[in-house]
Image (cartoon, rainbow, N blue to C red; front, top):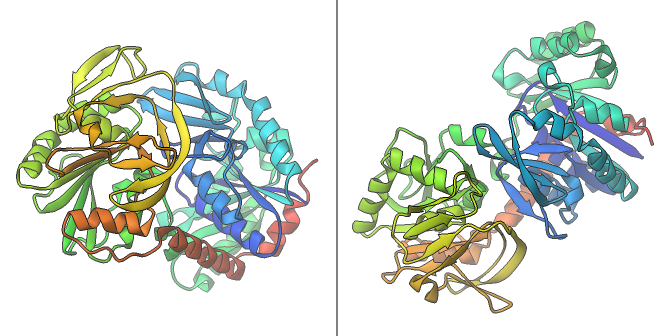
Length: 486
């Protein structure tokens, strides 16, 4: 068959979810479907079967296709480390650091490798569903682009533009995109669809017709507000700016939002627990005194985030929480922060040096150039888990004699303090298994509901796919994919 690309009028218009839903809808029709995103920028990543890393959204889209994630699905991944620098990951492996000054030239040089990945996927399936990044209307970024029209034109993939009606101004967003982009880019766009509509779509019929008339593009439907999206792991840190539900629940688990927080989807399974209120704490707010557990999530720049944690006064809050008998869990970078010292002798995160950690675990971490990328399985807190490691650094010390996890190959991971109240681990996905989550909650006096997080995600994908089949012209989108150039 071919390929189809969804681009957006802006960031966070729902492209990732729509691609996942469309992948599941086509897979449910019996088609072999694969997802693809030429270039992604995210600190939420997942480890693939071929030993690399890709954006978390593409891993979710692979689940939607009922296939194993592969590095070809996201050949270029940028992981922000500071305001002006990002780690460059190509075909799943770190290839250095890009700064704002050399970003455009470097990304343009990667187009050949992007097209190679796309060609391999195209040869392996019936349909490739491609996700753009940001918006093609960002014409100041058009030179050297490989994420939107630069890829679409090079690969000959037809484009459907996604507009988000929930944020307002969707008519101007779609028609305005048609106005500002290059005519040859505009020729790649075959239509549009409206996303996140609340209420009766008939109320937008006039607006829909005006977009068709003013843009010259046909509409492929109006997708409703998809409540099942809340049960999917999020890749975009925009979600952290929104309040979490369940503020009135009995047991509070708090996670401070640090500037370079990564893989915060590790905490998503806690949302399944009816007796838990997961609170993501933004800057400027204290960690709530009533928290039973404080979680420090992963970080793309651990030393910088540790400094930010202290600047917010959260280190004082965490120590007070610990003195009151509260539990603390550190995952990956958060685990490194809990130790006595964190050293960066090679200048991996910036200037070479060493800083004091929070001192809640008797361990020390040395950052190393080699990145651990592997899937792991084993036992932690008396329960089974499946997850993955994705970190740079080695952690040693007295508390590692009490490991949090033991892998099936005999290796040990993490540490537990002598009093049992502070725990750290490099394993991502540790809380996805219901038995593992129940074991953790038992340590803080809570009863886990035992709900299967992975099954919840799979059910949500089926619900989204069904909604797209009902409200979008999926047949038309499938037909459009057949015009992709070989």
